[in-house]
Length: 156
Image (cartoon, rainbow, N blue to C red; front, side, top):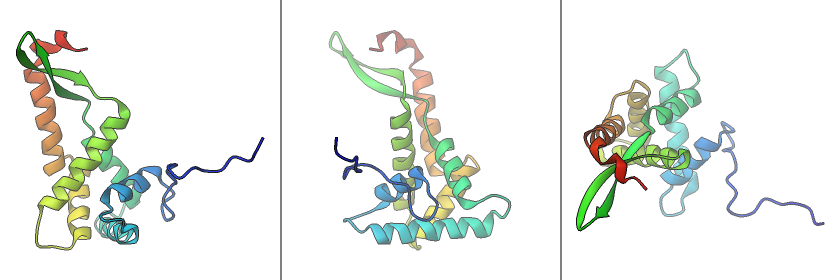
């Protein structure tokens, strides 16, 4: 038996915070393969958060913000007899995390006119306080699922 090595697709914790979630977030934030730029933006945002929230470590604020944005239920289209229904379904953990990260980054990229690390810090703080664009998106998703409860029996 040979020795076990980490494969290329294994996600490693980020060097500064030793967090897998931070590493995943940095990878999603990365654009055009520029990881060092994504890391600079992410850590700059954490520094901004640390200046504003003195009582908790910024990485905890970040993790709680992502946790707050995670959706528990979503609607999926299902065709039944020629008609399409929006069927509410539970979201598995991996997809919850992916959607939360995607929504936070979408909210950051929609804002214009300021440095990305400042926009990211602002959105993470808003999500930590359960407000902001990403949280609004989560609430809309939950509201839509609630409105379509009648079609839950179509879930597959």
